[in-house]
Length: 450
Image (cartoon, rainbow, N blue to C red; front, top):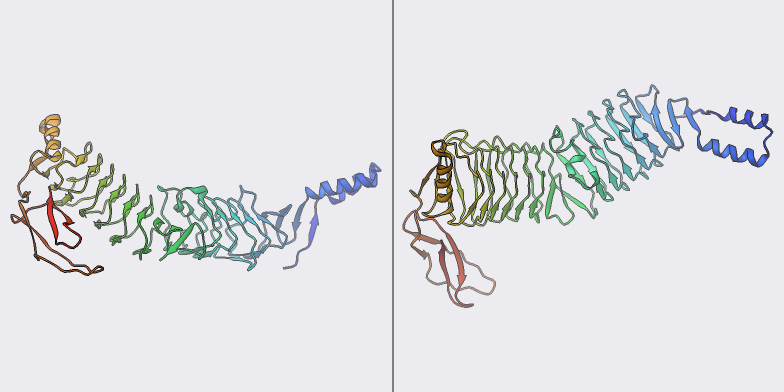
């Protein structure tokens, strides 16, 4: 595209210098000062101020930004209208300012020059660009602002560069694509890919992890399944915010599920693997489709409101393993809302937070005589009287009195392994089994941890 340039104010400056008979030196200084303040209007509809493109009023749908532009946008106003369908950004652009493409609803393609010098993309820069299906941010970009790609309802995949260091000023990674955790989830996004070599983030199967791969930071809400990075140990806060996944197989490398990790997700059933030691507060808050949860021995803590506002089904039975030392307040505050429910607390001294289950629903609490579970029900009945619908039972909770192994002796090499099956007696007994070796070369022994 050829451009015919006109410098506004140049003629007025010449007349001013002649009329006042300014010395040559003064004239040169004034020319430089005015040049620094020059606004250049191009015949193609571009308004450029000192290298900053502030407006485009042309008729072209496919726009090539002129060379010489270093910044797109003034940080407040959108540069392009919704009529623009594609934009080519030249190599010299170093910044796309906040709101630069805000509401450019007709934009379907953005192309960066191969030798792009872009380093920064401001907040809400592409907000509501809702026909763009894919976007690749060039190498060299180090910073992307909050909500930069929010409300992009057609965006399916985005590739972020290895140079990216700062996202949303260090806040939740998902703020790139949504207006906070309560904002609408991206409607089509299924893949966020990080170029190899990034020292802050990696991606696996379209989800974003910390650089060491141990913490899942963000999984696009519209992914229907996930292939886990093999070293993941923690699911970070809001990682599965508003996730559409109905089922998920948590990996056996997982240790921690952070606060709000599955906030407002669509899970219908859940099984917590034995590797998980802690579930944070409100980890599964507002999972209204979640009908049942299976916990496994090894879990230690369940945080406040961890399963608050979940839709546990009529007749559901939850079992809290003996390894759990504490269950937070309101952890299962909707248990029994859909009908009669049961909860088994296998530990004798598990700390049960205030209103960990609702006293006003028909819930049968199973536990050992003298356990904290029995104490909880007794206290609620004393406090709430006839309004308390809780029932405590030891029926079906059988104390183990003995243990046997399926083999009397085994021989192992230094690197060998063997599986032993322990049977508790009497039949139906419940308890945790702790294994230990009586001697480096001797047979293993086992005892129920009551």
